[in-house]
Image (tube, rainbow, N blue to C red):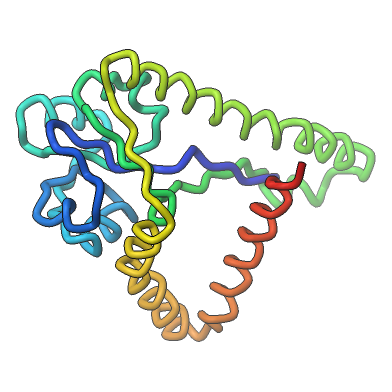
Length: 204
């Protein structure tokens, strides 16, 4: 029916401000899934843990940071543990999610019902995105209300981080080729689609 995704995942740290790529070196960071690859490429030590385990991992000092979206600062109270967020958009991640319907059931529906469902989907696409944005705002406010500080990266530093994680994309292209798929074409299509959406959103 449609896809959606949570806000960008940023590196949150406790007692350690991360302002440059070198500051990531050797840090024990809670992560899972794709964030583990990003963490490794940036020179940190990935420590697996679920999001529900992250609060105690930070509290006990098992890790000094974690990679997650602002939303979790409030919903999981992680903003009580972390002091800093490095808003490194150039290496942020998000997890795609989707709303689906059984294809055979869909094909069996009359066209007027299909059209009604598609109209409802079109209403929910922006609402789903706005909901995630709202959750992120609440999480950011929760984090700041507990004394947290947000650290931005200038264009030059952001580019250094982006270069550091590029091997992830390069390896994925090779993986796709091994699956008999045109990896470069797929990545180019994805990048162009994302850049097109960014350009549309930046228009006044």
